[in-house]
Length: 223
Image (cartoon, rainbow, N blue to C red; front, top):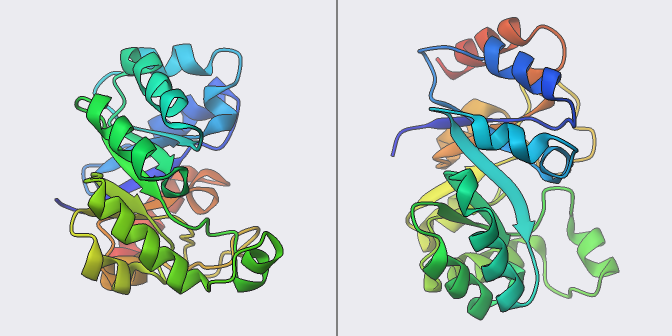
């Protein structure tokens, strides 16, 4: 499968995204670009993505709705020809199977428990299980639905990979020395790959400050 780096384009500015794409060009890493709700819902975001050529595109829509709505949404963005598309595993087996059925060449990525959650946060919203227990259950469901990939925090990768045998993508990645901000379960790129991730998502550690220098720092950190 090969290690991939997805750079999170967390902005609503097309100029900012162009800057990120230009400054992250390198032959030393396989780089894709992750676009979340902020960019895709911005005025010209969708149009910009539709014109991108020869790039690995990760549409982080995190679909979480009734099966029919999830399926209709996948059909509605077919023209974007994205390589990866996220759907919450908590949307249920029927929705997951339905989305996978109509996805064509787009890889469907099941999102487990968000990296902004810890056990205390889960309890607040009514879950009695721990993060670990919940993620294991979600990985089993992703496997049952024959999804192409799952998203989980780097800390859960060692036990997710025992259940889910395809791609494992981990957000919550920071270059050493960078602050955690809003994510709770985080680690460094090297540790994430060592744990068994096939791809990582990295945002602010690359996109803030000198992007070229940050990319070089990332390359160095993986050697």
